Amino acid sequence: MIFTAHDAAGRLAGETALAMLDALSEQSPIGLHLLGTALRVVRVNTGTPAMQGVAADELAGRPACKVYRMVDADVEALLSSST
Image 1 (cartoon, rainbow, N blue to C red):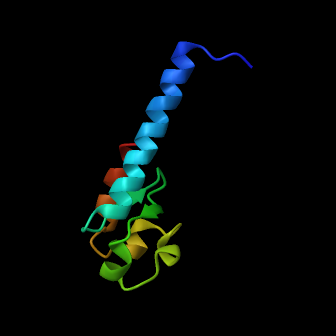
Image 2: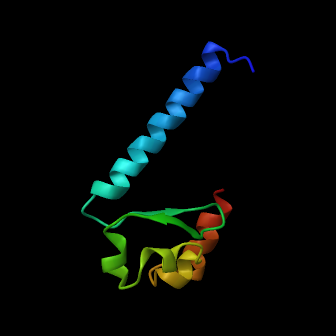
């Protein structure tokens, strides 16, 4: 397999972004939620379960409108149309 400088730079940028996401997820005192393009919970940080009163693994994969009462049908439609 041959890697170019561009490939290495891209991998480094991806690894850096992932490391930053991990650090933010583990160290942020506020609840952070990462939603996928289908508006389902992909990842939450360590502060979120206490805010939601459920375990983090119970949130993963659930639709945002089911997890967060603040997301109504209009907001969900707006977010869905921007992807």
